[in-house]
Amino acid sequence: MSVFATELETALQAVRQAATVCRAVQASISTDSLDKKDNSPVTVADFASQALICRTLQQAFPNDPVIGEEGAEELKTDSGADFLARIVSECAAVGVTASGEEVCDWIDRGGLQEYRPRFWTLDPIDGTKGFLRKEQYAISLALIIDGQIQIGILGCPNMPLDSANPDGPRGILAWAVKGQGSFVQPLDEPQAATSRINVTSTAASQDARFCESVESGHSSHDWSGKIAADLGITREPFRIDSQCKYLAVAMGDADIYLRLPTRKGYQEKIWDHAGGILVVEEAGGTVTDIHGNAPEFNHGATLSKNEGMVVTNGQFHKNVVDAVQNNASA
Image (cartoon, rainbow, N blue to C red):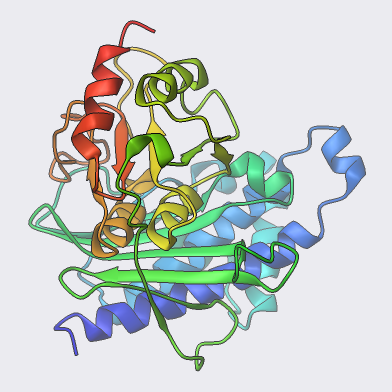
């Protein structure tokens, strides 16, 4: 077993528990709340997910800091009281009884923004709009030591277990430990057999399938369309939300995922990528930024030395990076 066996088991348990809360909240979303553009369900799920995961990490590894997306400041105000009560209630529903103060403390444990030699990074719900549409979202957690991702985990509650049967059972837990491969298991079955996953063996870029964001605000669709034309790709892109795109490449449902900057100077957040990157790399794929540089996780909360992201099965990665650069004025 890995030297990180305890860390892996603790983190998988934490993500499973958070997924239970996220599913319960997502199931409560009504058509009426969507019509009113009410984002409160995702806010409750986001905070509850972070609280539960940070609680579990704190109990097992009290000295490990967490770089997370959320802070509890707004929950401590009068206007946040209702949200906090709902978050406390959702935690209680999965067996974690706590005061509002305790919940806020757990959330704030994810408040680190500066680099440390050892830390976790967490996105409690990646894919807010997918969550609200009752489609794809991910819970992403990674352990980073000396700037290197050692554990990457993606909990994808709505991903079909079999992509050929999209209406079949859903919920995938995927993980990787550096140097040990990538694996998946049904999210609801911690005792089930695990399966090793691998990227495709597609050797020619023109035969590849793109995976990209549903939301054009997250990645430039016009730019990616020109890149696809340059590479001779004619297949329709596979559009899903969140870091589920990383999992799609790792499992072989797509060959390429591009995260192309939508505005100059934007710095990617580490929690949007860390979990997915290791799952792809350990499945045999390649991940760089749009300039072909390796992602650098030793600059705090952002990938400040990188721009965008290019994820492939590794067979034609340089061709894709070149095509991105050739169409950079798009």
